[in-house]
Length: 336
Image (cartoon, rainbow, N blue to C red; front, side):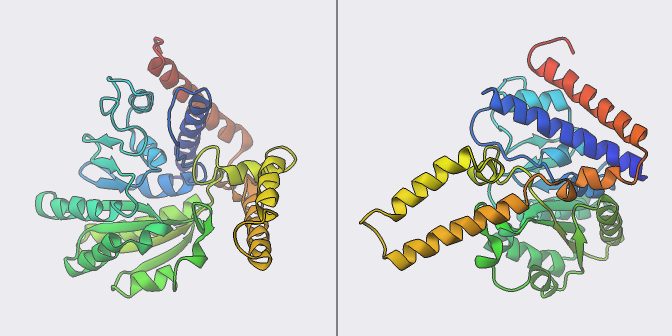
């Protein structure tokens, strides 16, 4: 697919995520909302290679991929609004969306997309030779036993499966390096998987690497592993306190830091040295969160837009906005 085609898919995915954010802030979508803002290059770069008979196993942040796959936007919106006429009868929410037509399924269980993807790949190998499956997951899933077992089986059974590890360096509000030993690429390579380490903000780089891995899998040459480094521009979930504090230190930050300092000065709990260390650690996390916030240098759409003419990019964005606006109108009971 050409750069403009990839950008159109990225713009559609971003427009849909932005619409979800508006509906959540209006109180129409309940519970936590895990957006894929910042992962559009991964969704478009990988998914545009897929066709009929291919399958995808997704994590709890799967709407960008589902959007690129062509799942009906209004049906997904109705699902997240809890409507009985939604994609899954209003029972799945945003973390467990499924589309039988597109052989796509999401799960909120960390690491479960690995075994699910292996099941898809095994079924494809037996029933649809030449088809492939893709499993998308975050870097934290690489510490789950079921995913490590799947890496092993995928190689042992030569499954047509491509693992896509979206690494943003965070485990919710914990720096991933503090809870993950070793190197993720070396861990995957130890199972015998061909590994590609990619800038997940560069859609052309993702598209090329994914194409090579999927081509190899289709030919029966076994699974592959893509580690794509991404930035989650809205944090772990919409309304993430660390993101709010980092973006509005004078507002949100004042309340958070006031609570932290008041707790640090209480007479109960750990010693002064331990409390001071905890406060400094929190300040460092907020500093990092601010640095990795909504910066245009870390926005995959901004990266992709630079390679296009301004008018062409704006036209693609306007088309995406109009398409999503129509879907929202339908989902909220309008005529579309």
